[in-house]
Image (cartoon, rainbow, N blue to C red):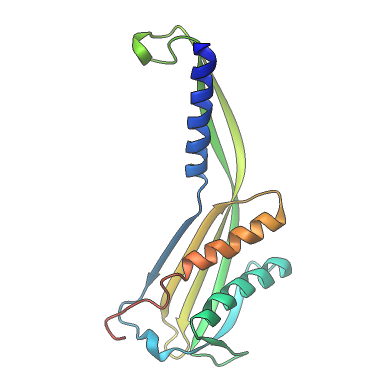
Length: 179
């Protein structure tokens, strides 16, 4: 019974670690000299690389967050120009499981009496970067990024996109020295 319990504990710990490793990471930064209270409108410049399905989803998610902050989208000539960049890449995860007695060097005082199995798993990771530029000065004033593991299910990816963009804009507009 002890080896089964030990295996179950290792599996639970692995799943917790895997969830933490694949958790969505959101970061933001901004120009601390920018006066965000002067900005009320924005225009989309582009989304790179272009993919019509995801372009519309990204715009919809960002538009919803900015509308909630009182900003208005205009076709051209907005106070702020927005550019979004999305990328995907394949990552590899290596996981080692120990069974039997021992479980590695010095574990529970027994060394080398168990077996170790290492598995590798490839997964896709997506990154979205949203840049905001002052339309008059062409200077970058705000950047948000969200990184997450992609699912094989488009609806799950869309929900994660919306969640990531919401986190990105949670403290927007930022407080700055001039506001």
